[in-house]
Image (cartoon, rainbow over the protein chains, first blue to last red):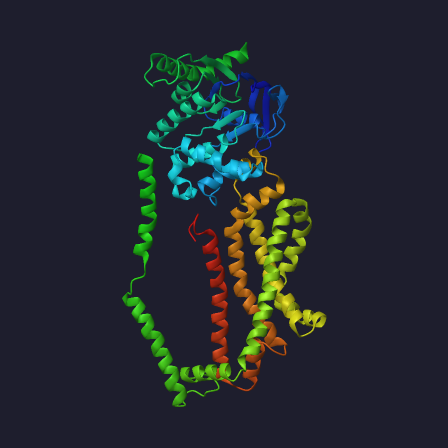
Length: 259
Length: 274
């Protein structure tokens, strides 16, 4: 069953001045089959770096990431990635953007069409199929970006702050849609966000990273059944807890160093 | 749905200003037209009244008559065809090579590392300075012109292609990698469409210079062509023909550039402003 195991992952990179910067330190995390896990943390804590390591887009300096117990060595079709700004190709229509991965994977034309029609429907993009990204609103673009990834039926979907560039109302709609899709398809999802209430609303589990060098500070399991409401007691309580823990994070870390 | 409305609004916003931008005939435009007409009338009168010798200036009506004459008696056509042949062949060869080498460099950075110094060096040579050498090597006919126009074109297109390819955003490359796109396909499906803007800039820039190249080289040494006709007219002090040919060459040059603007519009207008 598709699961992700992150084992002792660390990342050190060289900044512009030639200094070594530790972005991630000794990350251990297992994401189970069908689980929705979010990573939150202060900006610069390396959460996007961690996601790119899992995606195989950059190598870890130490440790390994396993998909179904096989080490990840580079990007692959088993792992889908949704990017922050959708990153649609502006020279392709929505339909063509959605077809991109299937073109590369040489999926037969009829099959492509079938899957595209299904996802156009699922993402509410039917009337926009032949529009170019420049003709779409930010929310529509992000829908198309998500559709382009999900259409490949990846075992695991990674999302890097996918809703950070859309307005608040659209964001709520997209979150609800994502929950609905996750409920029906039961895909394993690793979700990176800086929006704590978003993480709590969507996830089965939320991982809080410390400020740089990022390491796991805390883990929160959210048991409330989907679909959840933003006003559920537990949702509010855990969100508040995480916010409190973030501000404690810095001191916490220093204390640990002294021990 | 709210987002439907915003998309429609955005489209409206895009179309509205262009409608308003349609040029109005202002006082300035009228003044410009009056100025040009006055200039033409002055030329006509000055030459006809012998205020200025017809060796130095030609009356617009004479320029027009001369044009009609050399078109009708078949003087112009063979020369025009030869020039067109030279410029189109040289330009096509240069443009195709420029884009192809540009993509090759993008695919194999080592090739670029090796070649770019040499290309920059050759590019730095003023092309007209090596025309005598080209004539020694290739004669005064078609071949030396072909090579000259090729050299006029290839580097501009090449460096614009490479420059455009290098600007491709990281995100698109990440998308390509995530979908396991191979190197060749990444270049053709992602880098090339991205670089199109820059490639078209190269094509438009070199279209004008290619025309300059062909006229210049024909004026220097040739047996035929528009440039040859220009040099000949000068020798015979046929000023009205000189004027006509200059106008003709200008129009050809503008049309050539326009052609690529049209081509760019046809390929790209759907997804970006051209």
